[in-house]
Image (cartoon, rainbow, N blue to C red; front, top):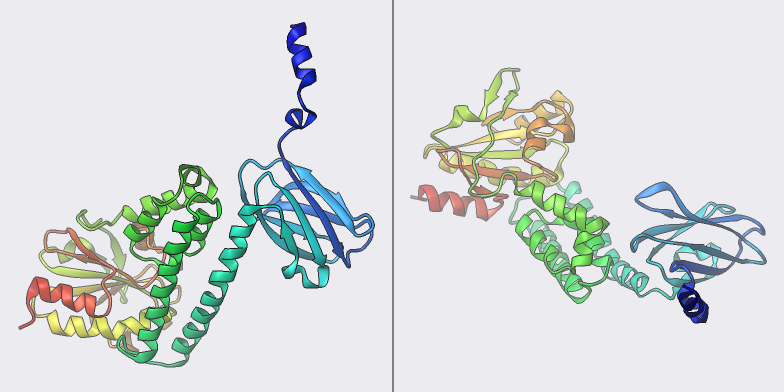
Length: 361
């Protein structure tokens, strides 16, 4: 026992110290003695460390269970900065008036987060601008130049995303990036492929678990599985079941009057319906509207002459929840035996699939 105590006493003090993070800041413009705190972005009530400004400087210490996105709060000026760190030794310098340009050093993980911001922020700003252009132009067709450019930009973001994750698959930032961009990818197999690029530690972390749950949820309603039956009221209040369409090819089309991409896609669905409705094909629209009048008006305006149902519960629509619908437009093509044989068929893809099944002559 004495020998063990002697050995411990001889160990360097650094090895005996508890591993944790240290954030040392020198930020001008902070009120003297004002509070600085570090909180979890995903759990804002969880404060990891508290400090106080002394001669323009501050120091925060603590222990982080896993690398994640945290918020540095400057209470005296009601400003904040984002840090993506683990148990790192970090310095923060700059002027509080340019809080988004603070110089943060000491964490390779935060460097990856900055690379994400520098790479994707311009891409998403452009995507927002293109979305606004789509909203401003009524009756945009799938083949119109503005829609083609929009889809090309989305595909460019997806390619950049895969490259980013491939290059940083061991970084805790990689699963975070996949989570915050997952709404762009309707094909769950692509999201799963990118998820499988991650290191095991990333898969087991906070964002990795979110991804796994999202992938598992989206496998419900997968191609080759049986379509889940449901009953919902049509526009007149009459209950309609999916089972009542057995014997036909039916496209379950999730949409809403307020969803601009849905309205842009509607002319394509109308064309497919008119072309194949006499070949044992129909459409069953499931709306995520929350008010009846806009729903009925959109059906009329877009000439959607098939059966429509909704419980007017917005994103809590019970059929959408059943099929794990997290973005619209989304659709499922069901065969006469009730099997799902297609998913997220849009533009020319829908007509091509129906031509394959039913012939185009």
